[in-house]
Image (cartoon, rainbow over all chains, first blue to last red; front, side, top):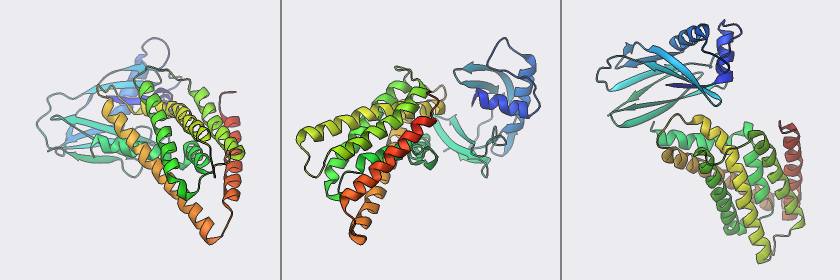
Length: 125
Length: 194
C-alpha cells in the first residue's frame, strides 16, 4: 500500500502530463487511474533476493488528506532480502522523503528513501 | 532498520528541525530565566512539557481529539510569547513556591498545545497500522532525546557566556526573552489563522 498526500500526488501527476486531474473530488476517473498506475509503476519497484517482482495496481481511495493506493504481487516466493525502490514525489520536491515499512515473517523493517538514496535493502532473519 | 528506531529518529528530527524551529524556540524561552545550578527545576519543567505533549499527541493519534491545524499553528507561537513575557516580570532567582508551581503548570498546559502540533506530522506518518503504541512511544522518546539535547546546547552556551564573557545572567534572560517574544510575534503573523 502506498500512502501519499493527495495534493502532492495530484501535482506530481499533473507534472507527468495528466491534465485537470482531481483525485479528491467526484466519481472514479478512469484516466486518473491510468496515470496513477503508470506513475506508481515508474516509481515503485520491488525485488526479492535480487529478482524483480511484478506489482499490479488494484486501485486507490482518498482518506482524509492522503490517497492510499493498493498494489499486489502474485505468488511471492520465500525470500531473505527485499530491495525496495520508491521515488514518488522526489522529482517534485527537493526535500521529499518516503518512509517504507516491510512486514514479513512476523517482523517489520523500515527505511527512509530520499534523493541520494532512492533504494534500500532490508534483510530478514 | 527496525521501525522503532525509524519512528525514534523521526521524533528526534521533528523537534530538532531548524526549518520548523518553533519547538526549539519554546524550550529556549522556557529555559531563559534559569541558571545552570537550577537544573532540577529545568528538568521538572521539561518533563512537565513532555507529559503535556505526550497526552495530546496520543489523544490526537487515536482520533479522540480532532485538531484545527491552523489554530494550533497560531497557538504555538502564543505559548512562546507568553513564556517570554512571564520571564520578564517573574524573578526566578528566588521564586516563591507558588511561582514555581504556576511555571510547572504552564509548561504542562503549553505542552498540551505543542502535542497537538506534533500530531499532524505524526498522523501523516502512520499507515493503517493496528498497533500505534510502538510508533507513539518511539516518536515520543525521539522527541524527548531531541528536547534534552536542545536544553544541553542552551546551557552549554549559557555557561560559556557566564564564565568567559562574564555577562550578567539577567542580561541573558532579557536578551533571549526579547528575541523569543519578537520571533513568536512574527510566527503568529505568518500563520494561516488570519
